[in-house]
Amino acid sequence: MLAEKNISLIFGAELNNPTTMEFTQYLGFLAFLTVFTIGFWLMLFLASFVGYWLTGATVELIKEKRAEKRNKDN
Image 1 (cartoon, rainbow, N blue to C red):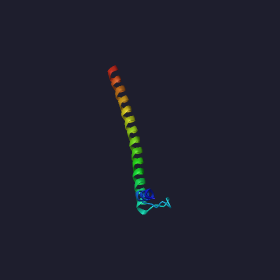
Image 2 (cartoon, rainbow, N blue to C red):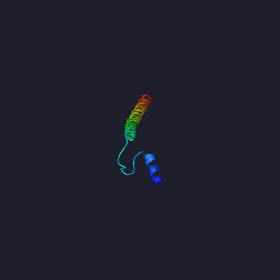
Image 3 (cartoon, rainbow, N blue to C red):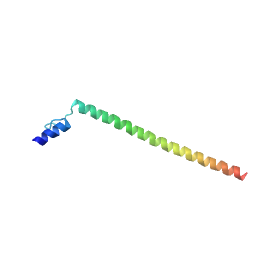
């Protein structure tokens, strides 16, 4: 019985109805979802931006090497 009370104190919900959430738990869950969603989209944006940056840098490097090779041949 003591373990059940400790669990209910830890999670903040009664054991007889584990599907109910208190308002603070609901706010915490919403805060978690907000932070997780912001982090997900930021990670996606940064990953795509880094790919775009690396592709552009590679294309510019190839163009410079071709121009240098043309100038060397002439």
